[in-house]
Length: 219
Ligand SMILES: NC(=O)c1ccc[n+]([C@@H]2O[C@H](COP(=O)([O-])OP(=O)(O)OC[C@H]3O[C@@H](n4cnc5c(N)ncnc54)[C@H](OP(=O)(O)O)[C@@H]3O)[C@@H](O)[C@H]2O)c1
Image 1 (cartoon, rainbow, N blue to C red):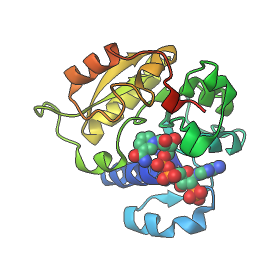
Image 2: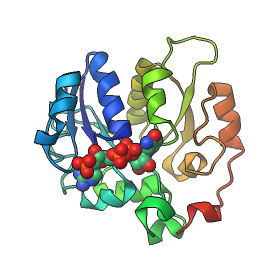
Image 3: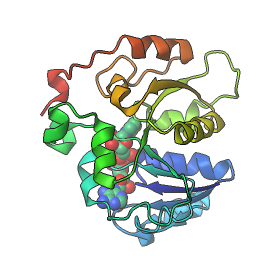
Image 4: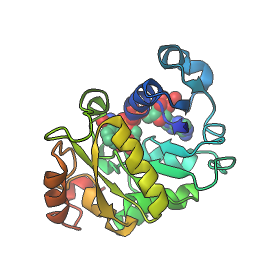
């Protein structure tokens, strides 16, 4: 499958490694330009591209840049993507360490709803609470006892299913968090964030989440 990855850092780099190893055709972009991605391309066989080119013909696009960089992404980011493209948002709001104050999120908008408004395309929230190293190390075959599960939120049922199928291929179970309005259940500071448990543990952690943003996660 053609997959575009925008952001080639901890998460984007490791998704590029695993998805190419599974035989997917991956295009990967960063902010500095394709010529700076030669090492990752040689290691994985992925095609380095500009952010504007990453979505071309892709059935899945991953947006995995720091939240504060989302407004800098080129307009028309999803132009040329395959019909029904599923866009994964891995982002987290780190107001104190990295992103500064984003008023709409402080006022209660979910982080992924803010991102989808910025890029002008619906998103599926996934991988945001997953350690980048786990993408490389913790994938297991379907049915393995204790197989790690990832929460996935989003409004488009077909896109969400495509993302869940891809995560299964990567070696993880998934749990449906609900629509994007429920995606606060998997934001930073919730019981599921960084949780490496199996599906039962993730269902429990999602149910225990509180919608209140704690001081640590406010600007
Ligand atoms: N690290 C984790 O374990 C982890 C886990 C779950 C979720 N997340 C979340 O996932 C997102 C990415 O995290 P990360 O740790 O992978 O970040 P990272 O290592 O800092 O990498 C960020 C990547 O985004 C690229 N980028 C920045 N601005 C861009 C732009 N305008 N256009 C295109 N590419 C741009 C950077 O390119 P340049 O290097 O060229 O600037 C870099 O390749 C964040 O929201 C983070 O909170 C991270």
